[in-house]
Image 1: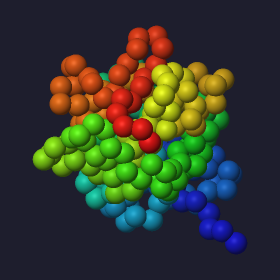
Image 2: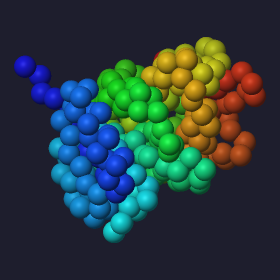
Image 3: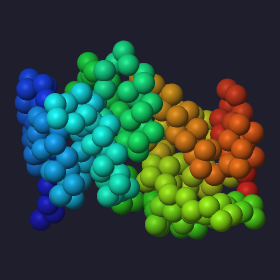
Length: 235
């Protein structure tokens, strides 16, 4: 019998936390929880969880600091951040620190469950495909180890960044629309009302890593209103 997937919920609002625990236990997950930042970090760093639901505003330590500490130890830990809907800065900072996704409050429980399922489906998958990506003469990316080099500069990537690069690399002959990335990389169904700024934020993060001049990209190209394309050697 396969083990249950384990979720850690770090949320200080008792009503929200209890509701989330009930929902994910009902859907067959094993759930642990914390309402305090420092305690949540200790549990998160144990490496026992398949996914962490992480609120931004917490007593003791905020969610951004927790996410950063988790990423220092593991680039592969799945993290979904819960943020205030009116605060775009929370979303940008969370993604910049390496969160796999964000959900804004107030949120639909059904949509949150779908997003959790989408992230978990990707966990441990995809990294064997296109295990080495070579772009031009300067840039090489080791997808298996979430690392790379641009000339003499060492690079590190999150799992999500690698998944984006792999998908664009597999489809190098054509432009890939933003909606296709949301569907194929994030796993979002077409009918979901998803904020597509998520893709733009990740593309900007990748350019800062792989481009010699992110303001004038030569490898990761955007055609406004059409999509993205990765330029380089054939797969």
